[in-house]
Image (tube, rainbow, N blue to C red):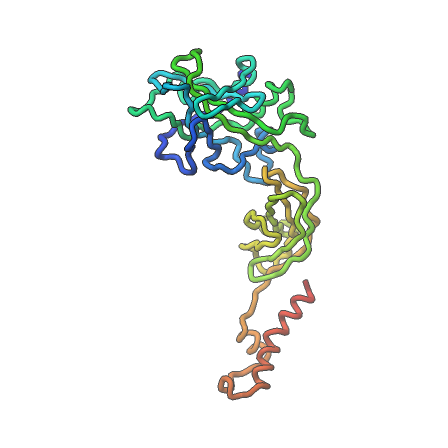
Length: 327
């Protein structure tokens, strides 16, 4: 457990400098500056990025303490953060109890924010501490230990999927807790098993337009990738989004690209990559370029009559039809 404690990163910054949502209810912990659900996925649990998805290894905690009647912060107090086995008992913001087992087995960090175990409070005893960054891996280790498992990231998952966090404050190191706040995360160690089905790759000037059939996971997002066949150009990818089509930009015209797509569940676990389709970006001529390249000449605008307009339209549409047949 000592190794895990050393892996924790704790950094305090002033409350006014924290961007995002801050707690409004006593006893509440906000995770990553948002009230959206927070997760620990496979990569985060293992503590190693998978190179596929941008997974933050730390989670930022901001809390507002609930005190017993008449309780308040005092200078020189200390905080500790631990994982509790079950949902904390609460009968209103003045009564909040976190179940803690053996000291050390469920502890994620002691003396949060200070090497000597003390924290100074501001003049009005504001019970808000902002932006303490804690390793998701260390939270997962404590969750496994308190639930009797030696494996923090089992596959398939055999641990409870809800992780309960608790912050406690005491007036002195080892003192009776006087203020608490809680939160929960979802431990998701199951990646999508089925890949998206890439249906088509449209072509454009220095870009490709892939579209696909999505995966079954509710709330899934997707990212498409273009790798140059033969490694003649750096790989590119689209932005991650919930839509089942996207645009990959920054490509080189005339280069053949192998295009694939992955889906991600709400926790960020990746699906297998789809089967690849190929696409080749190409220069797209505008309306007049296509017309002139086929021998067209300006003859006084609309005075040339319907036949001239039809010829103009035919000249513009023809390359598009040819291009569609090629793809």
